[in-house]
Structures are given as structure tokens and as C-alpha cells.
Length: 178
Image 1 (spheres, rainbow, N blue to C red):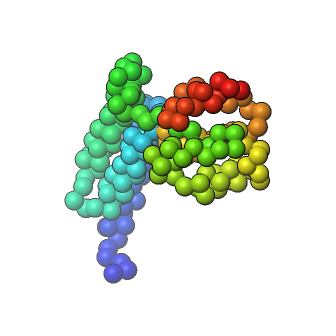
Image 2: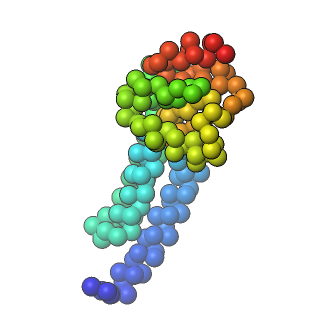
């Protein structure tokens, strides 16, 4: 229960170091985007890489070579999806969500909150965590494609930064009115 053999420990240290080195090498080749969290697909790849590393380290049934091939596959898929979304708007629309405006100039946007399944309390918590003690100091709160909140304080020119935000609640009308 507490100790099986020195061989098992040696295996974990050896395979762990080599798997880690292989993963770092692949991440350097495929670039920063592989571990970004720009959208849900990016998050899935990051979690899958971590899960694969843990499996390679702890499962005697998975060889180092199999783990490295799994890393290579995940990195290649991430690279391919990111590249395809860069060159194809149709593919990008299939893969990537749009940011959604949840709060704008003193108003919670009910339809957007319901669609995204976010409560007013969660939006207020995001305001507090970004350093805003009063809702009056906030122009907008956006639920980003990675699930994080962006809080735009007064005077941060939301008309410019909100142009790509989901228009679920007539955000273009709201931002056009100043």
C-alpha cells in the first residue's frame, strides 16, 4: 500500500522526466497557442495533455512511446484546428464561441444571462474580483469564449472593444448610443 518496489519508483522518475521533456519539446514546436485558453477546445486539449502525462507516469500499461505519440496527436490536432480556424471563417464559427455581453451601463441583460446560464451574483462577483466596488463604475461585463469574465470600467471605450461581442441583446444598439 505504501511501497511496492524501487523499480516502480525508478520507472516513474525515468518515464516522468522523459515524458516531460518530450511534452516540453512538442509544446515549443507547436507554439504558445497549444496551451492557450482562447476557447473551449483549447481547454480540452490542455486537460487532455495533463491527463495523458499522468497516465504515462502512473500506468504500467502505457509505454513512454505510446504517451509521446498521444502528446504528438493532441498537439497536431490542436495545431490543425487552430490553423483551420485561422483560414476558414466557417470552420472558426463551428469551433469557437462568441463572447457575450451580460451587463451594460447599469443593466443586467436577462436574455444573455439566461442563455449563458450565468446569475447576476456571478457577474457581480466578477466585478468585485476585478476591483470594482460599485456597479456604477462598470460599463460592461462580457463572458469571454474561454469562460472568463471581462469587466470594462467607466471610460474604457466599450464601443470599440465590444464590436465582436454576441449581439444577443442588441448590444450594437447599446454601444452605438454612446
